[in-house]
Length: 351
Image 1 (tube, rainbow, N blue to C red):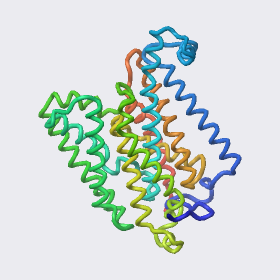
Image 2 (image 1 turned 60 degrees about the horizontal axis):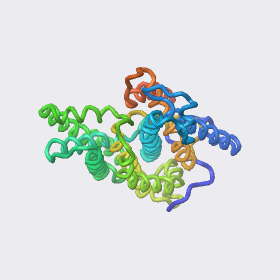
Image 3 (image 1 turned 60 degrees about the vertical axis):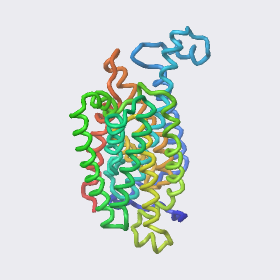
Image 4 (image 1 turned 30 degrees about the horizontal axis):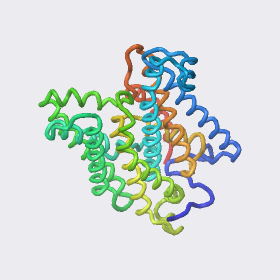
């Protein structure tokens, strides 16, 4: 494994001078503390607020084991969606950071790899032709479809550098287009399949239990481990392939490992909660503005900021239409669109 250089490199397209330079260690510690506190508040808010109003005292009583059984049932029903929010936010944010580092494209996100369309194709195929039903079966088939789609995109487009990145984008677009057309053809011809598919495709944390985590946790853990191990090499890769090779790095191996990790993470998240847009795009930009360009810090902070953002979006979705709920995928789209505009503005004038 290649280690990073002492000073984190400047990414392709980044502006001079140094708003992206790494802050001092005390400032990083303060930012980390604030991020952890915000995540803790987001977790508590996810447990405390829902379509049925519950007071803070009632929530605390549930946590202490002294609450009324009815209130306890309501609050405890929010535990799985909170855990899934933490899981999906972490996976999508880290996957987005990897994608932007590997492709050196600040607008890259996990959707570039055809993960969403692959998961949708897996669910639709299993429901329409194999008689699969139930939450557990849906997760397994979504996982299989997303992994196959990501693998296909990687095989077609990830080889080499330079033009290989262009092939990666084109391969992702082609695979996504073909699988989306397949999904539309099947769902339009089979109303029963469409009824089950339309709920999943929006992206939601509710209606799932802890069993879902059991199915998607192994690939996510593997992807996160690879991401952490690759973080020093991603700093070297940001210098460019020639410079990275001169420093003893293996750009092709680093890029392949980063893509595999991004596929595993985004696949696990999509299979668990459905496609949730913009988290993988917005969080890496937020983290980069906070801690600079060092991927060792960006991956760690993305794993904290991503869950906080997704949980807060889910809480907003529960409160704005109470007693109904707005799917978290819709809320993140509203939040992520401004983030995309800001990202484009930061690229203005970049080489």
